[in-house]
Image 1 (tube, one colour):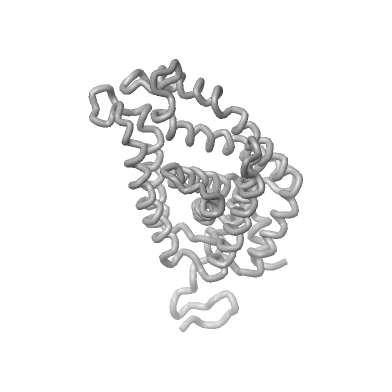
Image 2: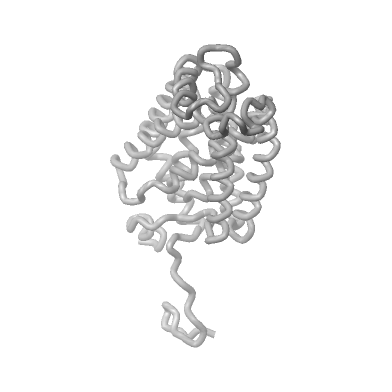
Length: 288
């Protein structure tokens, strides 16, 4: 059995994009800032300057790409090698093409199942980057570029990140069921986040409108009602499509991705520390 096969069997996490402490901190801070940019309608008090501002989502749409660029630059700085970069390009192109297949069909969203599987096998850092690049590439193909795109990229990045952070122990059928269940939760979560971004712009003067500075529970109730009335069918279709794809082709794709990992020799976390100078390494030779 190869080293990487043993690593996979023992439950250690593969890291095609390594999350060093500084990278993890940057990703965490940027994710927190992104979450605030999504959830600001639920957080601002009535007297705040941001409350009731119709331009806030558009302003955040300008700021969020800067945060994404900072995170991607940090992850790429010593944390991604040529093999991982090539695989990222291939999977981003495949995912963009898969999304085109579902364009125009209500609830058929084919981009998330591969994102979940790749995040699972290749690690949370790779999953986050793949989510961002997949949505960006597919937006270029489908003319879907707009102020919503940075929010879609970050939300999809979180889907891939979460898949990479799932427990590593389950294998076989249990692993596929775990990923299918995660895909359902992630599909509805993605839809809710995107509804939260557009909600203050879309419902002025209706019974499900955002009310600036209203109580959190009241605004949250209106948001859930808005989501149920406007996008539940789309979200349910996305969840079903993702779960079915994971159940049907998931085992084959997982196996293929793990073969790629073994051949590409990506790092495995926790990594084995390098031998100290003057001490014997694993082959019995002395270090330099």
